Length: 353
Image (cartoon, rainbow, N blue to C red):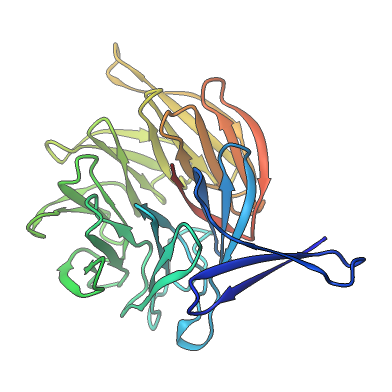
């Protein structure tokens, strides 16, 4: 059985066709209609998105992103969602080995918006500079895009409906991931070369403060417990920021280069991927000591990177960039229950219920 993926421009359809080499190329045409809870996995090298149906943990569709000319999509990276749309950051460079010493001169990124139901590309916006991610604001009315620059990074804020550029906000050097606090009132931008986090008021777009963190922060990852968890790649630490005060209240020493930090509110656990060793480590909160304590680790796959939890917190999905797989993990016993083959260099992942 051979599968061929066709994208029909202008028709708003993505068609997966299957043919058996023994049946004279008779084709069974199936239009994608993702009307079920799914995980969307961005495959950087393939420039595709794998759709995993959560009820079966099977890949049910593959969305091709590669275009031609100025519309060409190379090395899509992280992904966010709102309603029935997905926003993908396209830096145009492979970032799977880390973010130290990047030369972004002459690199232009893209903001890609995809219809999550049928896989059609809704928007393909060329950006002035390279971007690490593109993320919907909590209201869904805006898309925020950090621009990576060695001297003067910016954040671009677009109207999610009209594509109009609404705001340009100056931040630090080599802005990587942009995320929002759980209440949506603040945006946090990781400035890799400044070793800092810029905090922005999402309403006024004014800078609230700049927070010193560890060496080469890549992202400040949102916790439902009113915290932000900053993965300092070169410092091999996690800076825990209290959202109410914007003060670093704890620094967790890892002993490995972190990929992503992800907080599971239902279990009160902090998970951190360890790409060099193909593991995910988890920490539990010790109320008596008032600090995070390392629990254990589990093997997922080579290049372990992004972590996404289901809304009930009972299942985690981990992308393994070098293994070209996604690990499904039972969060109660920390055991891998299934390994799913996806595309090449899977990176960002988002779950849409």
